[in-house]
Length: 572
Image 1: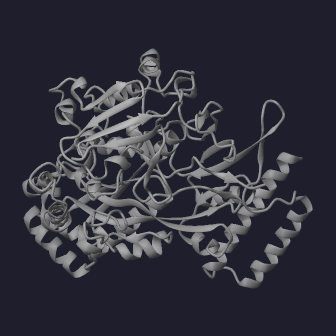
Image 2 (image 1 turned 180 degrees about the vertical axis):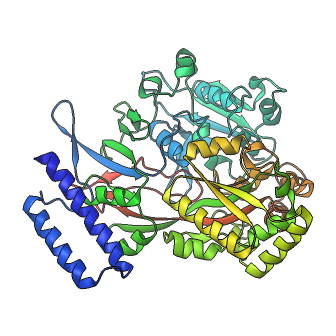
Image 3 (image 1 turned 90 degrees about the vertical axis):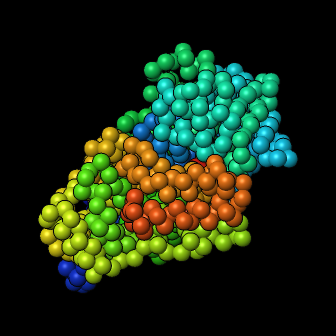
């Protein structure tokens, strides 16, 4: 009977949602909707258990007690728990539950002590000395400075082939270039253990955002003995992971869910936080909302019409994220080296309508490749305000550029647009297809939808033409976006000598130690990338409309860092 009640309730809730959206589109008269709604409510009352919106459920434990859980819907499946291989936000969020870094970020994004209880910075800004707290791995072994040395060496090692190995170069760690390129041994990387509890990091150039980056999962420690014992099995399951964070992995079912329970041996244990965190992989937002209303979820994302439906409900929340969605261009395709074609594509995208009318989740139209509220200038002005808007929607210009491109390419163009299988990406890709086929008469746009993991691999191998993709900032500086387009396989092999020189001068060369000159060089480089010889076509900055159970607090959202689910508290 209980099983029947659950599915019956879900069925009727689906009916309610479907009828609601039909009524909003004037397909059903309001009086008829009210009549059917009343019938459904009367049926539900007869078999309801009285649960309210938002989960307040507890999970039975093996000893018969109850464990308070936070259950979160995610539309992106967990890819990996290896913090040197991970590249996506979902994986980084999961990893940050089970591993600690030298520091963590507070609600405002400032570095506060974590595994490092304190640190010293030399007067010239080149040497950071971290003093580790007394903390253990989940197998009882002490966490030592050598765990950071080994972890960072693995991150930088050419054998690991981490897509984030460039971060050791970005931070200007001594000998990082040679280590990443394989011309210097791992031991030459400017990080060393002075003793078990003292870690020293030496830089070539002062780096303002260095300390905040220590909260990024790529720089978390790794126990060498455990890693070598597990070999290829490392991080593939909960049994093949070693933990030093507030939670340990409980289960991981690919394509379904992954969950964590409290680490009883965590050195900084907080008895008030939830005992269990579960992420459920649900791509359909209506299905997720049904689960929320049935009391089975605490956090769900909203999109499209659902935002209009629930934006006055208790628990509705809207935020602006740091993720910048853009169209990556594969310049190994000859036609995509034609700048007139690329200008036509850029002017032909109606970014404002995509953000406001297609997504409806608080997203905003992109004004450049660097998002709003990421970083402030030396004079205290937001980068985007300082650099100004570099993009516009102009169908007339788009058409003119396309005619010029056709003359150079010998006729109309057919392109394939690759995107991932989320509701939002599908809606955006279809709208862009319509934009281009309307504004560039004669062009043909074929859509190619793939699961995210497949889409990333296809782009890594350059087996695409144009790909709708995103980047989330790793640190609060424009460089985290502009570095993407230094020549490399994952971002279309953009190659522009002037762009490369400006980025080099700003990060390694003559402007690196002059904050204002560095800032100006980065702004000039962005203009080249999105205005002149186009290397990418920015589309929108991600919003985040969601429902959060009012009884659940403590989630910390960051523009320029991994969102923090470590401190969630749930009221009775």
